[in-house]
Image 1 (spheres, each protein chain N blue to C red):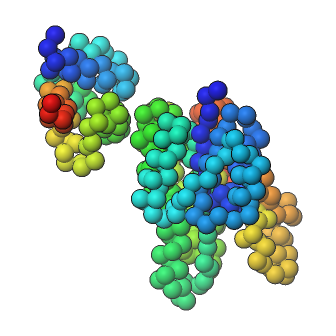
Image 2: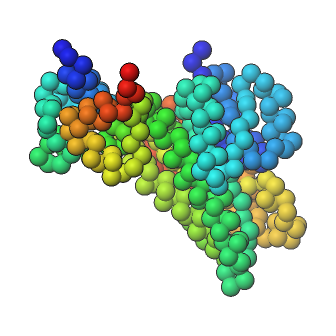
Length: 89
Length: 243
């Protein structure tokens, strides 16, 4: 499993565990919308928990609401933000 | 030992001190942080008597940055905060027609803004823990809205509404948010009354006596305890039967 795939798997586990979703991580698609009726159906309270979990686990700060909204669209967009947030080695 | 970390604002006043003592007596693993803007005798005595379970943190509750710094200090030491008691408050009474804008703004800041800033400051930690207890000290004035307290009554009514709104937001995360509404409590706030006013106030109370700070503290402690896990968004009146 390459690093990008591993991060996406971690994000899916984080979603299931932190938001107590009644599905398995494997059931979440990389491009599946997280919010709204056509996606996972997360709501604003889930978003709040997700912001805290991403900060705690990856140091990803999403204090700006617009940035948070754009970042938390899908597993792919979250993974891209985490990778972009990492200090270049 | 896993400590239970409790932050109490306005901890130098009579009520704050009684709340801190109630938590310290309740369980040996309770660790109490006294959020204090200006230290005083009550807090110093509590700290001296409970060196291993009680600490002071500098906190001007009206300043969001002060809250962030205070909570960061607590998290740096313990990594968690289990209970927040928003007790700091104060009143500057006047008829509305004669109330200065400063008296309005100050009372709103100390009583209502402080609760907003405090809840916001502890929220990331409590969400991360998926557990937490917030107890806001409102007032019977929030429900009675007595004359001469437009600012204080509005602020405390705001605390009640904030309590109920936040309780719904975070209920499923394991955080409870409740408020107590004390009536006439025999603390420094009543000590300023002359005897005639005290008698007049006492006559309005079905129990015919003022409440004790310890009686309010017991209610706060209960709302923060494990057995109160299904209580959220509630208001508990402690008023000797006035309302």
